[in-house]
Amino acid sequence: MRSQKVTFEGSQGNLAARLDLPEGKPRAYALFAHCFTCSKDIFAASRIAAGLTELGIATLRFDFTGLGASDGEFANTNFSSNVEDLLCAVRFLEENYQPPRILIGHSLGGAAMLSVAGQVDDAKAIATIGAPFDPKHVGHHFLDKMEVIERDGEAEVQIAGRRFRVKKQFLDDIRSHDLEEKIANLKKALLVFHAPMDTTVGVENASAIFLAAKHPKSFVSLDDADHLLSRYEDSVYVSQVIGAWAPRYVPELQRDQIRTDLRAGRDATVVAETGEGLFSQFIDSAGHVLHADEPFEMGGDNLGPTPYGFLLSGLGACTSMTVRMYARRKGIPLERVAVRLRHQKIHAEDCEEFDGGIDVIEREVELVGDMTEDEIKRLLEIADKCPVHRTLESKVRVQTKRAEE
Image 1 (cartoon, rainbow, N blue to C red):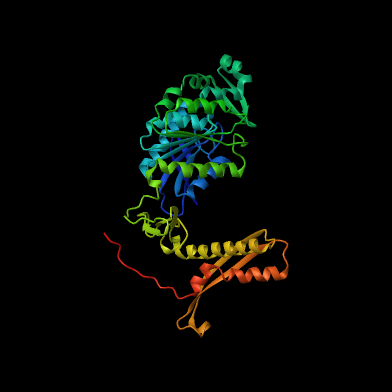
Image 2: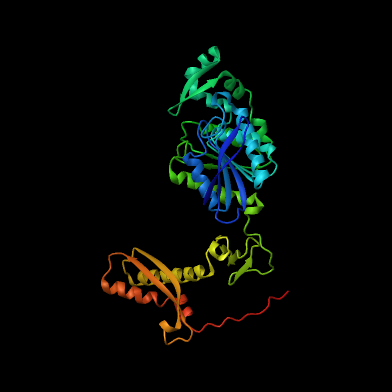
């Protein structure tokens, strides 16, 4: 992942942002909005962005006005200014990169995304994480100061251990927003994430958002995650689910759209160019979809294993299966088997019996279990007898012909 600092004009001055980019050419762009009084660098934002870059999705995350490294005073902001900042971020992506196809909002940032999404024509997929159904929900952070704010026009409040000045205009603004109609008219795919035990924004908010939305809509429970997704695995899970869900609605992410009349069937494998990058290949092996590519240093986009990576994978899988099958049949107490493989070429001077050189595959087999030395020795011998191993060491004839039109 490459992460670069960028700035753009917001509702009340310059906004500090980070654009997280995949190593290759981005396949699509996403915009992320952080939670109330947080910043673009909160763990959830940075980890989700990192996860999306691994899927080829560039992600822009920024500090709202008055927060983090952005200009402006928090006391002069409100929900409406957050929406304006989001629209500024959309324009920044449109003018300098590509329009965002995915919009992601965490907590109040999720509510702001729902409010603005209808104005972002190019966005096709919206994801909210622990979002409130009603912006007024954020007022619970300073319930004890409500009377003072109403009476004096402003007050200093403490949120998550930090002090902020909140003005009456903030309260008036959040009371003026009703998201129900906007959610109902999204006309975009919606994915709602929420943790049932979220003590900051109750799960009933997710229910209200989901019921207000029209299809296509989905809900994913985050089980025992906390509101801020402070555990690494929770943020990674969110990015993985978005990566699996979004391609249905964002054409740029649909790697499986290939042009070929060849069909794999039950006993064949079809490989075809995806048209994405220089070397990217789509693989259909008896209905199992895979992707192959070359690494960046070879001019590829690193979207999948290399051809030799697949060769080693086939040998490793066959080795493990064969060893397991033999151990089970012979009653050998093998608990776990793993195989590590490397491929290299040895030149002729290093191997005199071959004219021109030889390909060498180094294979390490990990065998775990309460086994005798003789049992381990026998399993290693069996590893050399796996079918793919025998095929690689036999005389293989590849017959090539043109596919019939």
